[in-house]
Image (tube, rainbow, N blue to C red):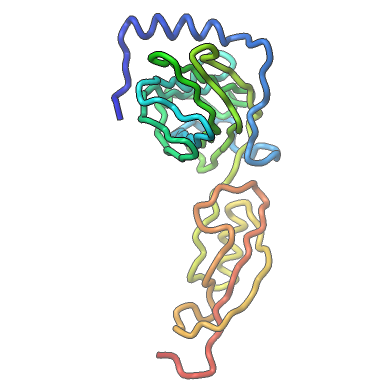
Length: 239
């Protein structure tokens, strides 16, 4: 992957392009993963951002440069600029890390926007979906994206507002008893969903959590129920 370019010529071209997308004729709203009241602390700092591209039926050429920026109302919060690679039809690429600027808070991003600008070398039409995941210093995260976007040499940019919706990570409760798992899930702002039992022929998870769904590390809305499977002792002696 080519390193981030910062030549004066490129910056001038990008500045011109950004003016063109600052007030689009029409802009949709980026789709958030969930539509719940944000639980991220307003003072939580943006600590990371990653983007994933899913190309549809029109590929991206290897020499088409892509600039993606996440905006607050007054500044840029995160960005990535790169050629990446040739993106084949119906392929997934990423996640790619985005550079995050210092001291951007969750409150700054309550009303944000994402902008895309491509610089093709000749003719190129790219149809794609994207997803951006942002993480914050209090452990929460926010994922948003759009489907069926299209950029080309004659339509090089778009800008879309998003509504800030936060998520929390599901803790790993595998191996804990039900009481301990419940405490951990509630501490993360989640609830216990359906509890089922299954025979554990290996005796590895007897009377403890053998599986959880959604899985550990999944980003979900606060209050999401997590289904647990408890291992039961088999009738035959344990190995």
